[in-house]
Image 1: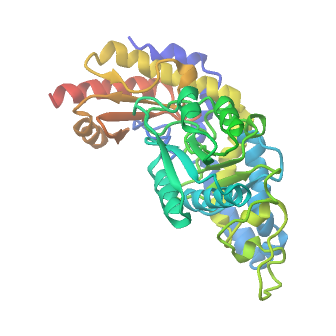
Image 2 (image 1 turned 45 degrees about the vertical axis):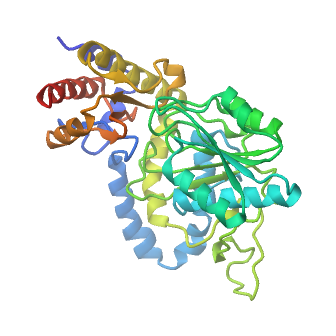
Length: 404
């Protein structure tokens, strides 16, 4: 007898599922933390944009609305998902480019004011792009990386960060939710520890924005970066976002000086003069089509409420852990068992999970695989049902038996 049916019947957010393309199919989608399903309303929104805004207004669209869309939509994102007051968030570029711009701007500022601060603190299981960008900037600027060694089933703790930071620390780079284990960092405490040591902090929100409540202003965060194609359902390659606390904006010089960040973009003068406020952190022409797509999901998140979305996320991941405990005795949990320490996905460990994942994909059950031996179950709260979780875990059990 299904244990999912009563959970779906009692789910106050269940009706949102029908507003996503493909959610009515039998496919089990366990990868919403890598690429969210499209919101059904997005197709009409994009069609109207092509017909009316792009096709109808043509170049006039820049003057009428597109020039301001990166910061206007950034303010919406900040209000709905990030706990950020207006004027601190902008959308555009990729996560990698935002990481480069903000890490480089932060360390240059700190080193200018205190040349002894020559270290970037980052953990060994931080997302690869974060580590690679930090390595490149350290080499470029003659800085040192100080590594925090973490278990792949956990993340950075307060004690570990206290031990790592000090009078040489310029910047700490941390993930709010660990991409592999879903470890949910204690952001307020870790931010305070870094600040007490005299350092700045950059938060990677890629695996939390739209799924886990974020309070950047409340944390007194300095900088943040995140993508919009996971829980924000902006589509493949949709633009990323950057956050710079208002108290820092005038002090930071972003290193990719493009025409859109100029104080007067159409002056076309011989020198660069940065715009005031958050606009100075924009570089090139904004990806308007990608921003159009993500607006539909932002509307759903606002309608449902981020706290209700988090409650559904906790319920889904807890149900997945419960089913794994009872139906997958050979599997170990590679994520925190306490849901208060866990983001929106769960990783299950077994030596055969690579083969299991390949077999599941052939059967329209779509999880992610992450070394070592991790099957990652990403459960996007508004588009995932408890029945989908139950059917997916049954398929995992079958595939494990078949690959033994």
